[in-house]
Length: 143
Image (cartoon, rainbow, N blue to C red; front, side, top):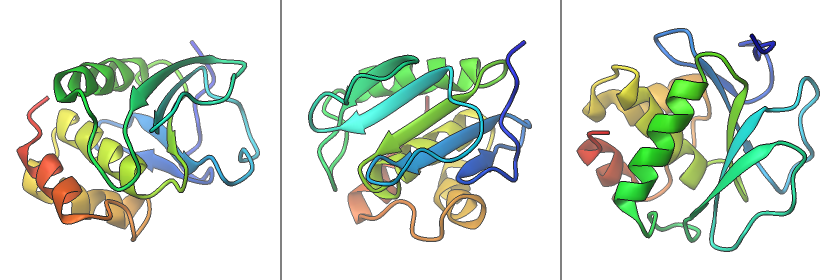
């Protein structure tokens, strides 16, 4: 089993199941601590080359993922992997797209969809999920 994140690590969200997922902004330096084993990058263009396994989900800034069914599949895979691996989600700033994706993971983890944005704001970043359409996307997310 892979060494997990610590819930005290910078940007790590503890889901109700105990799974830990790191969110971050790519404009900032990589936080101290272990590297992820799997990353999901929510960007309008491909991410830079990374030394760990990763997925790119095309998602322009302040918008929604272009392929919503594909996004749900990526979120589900990441949630499953977070049970035994270090998983991170990242966009440029680490708040809007990353917060939205983390809120969708919270829904997969059992948080009611209408409470998931508040859950992520309370436990990850108080500015997470930036736009009304991102909030609506989370409320309608069913996995």
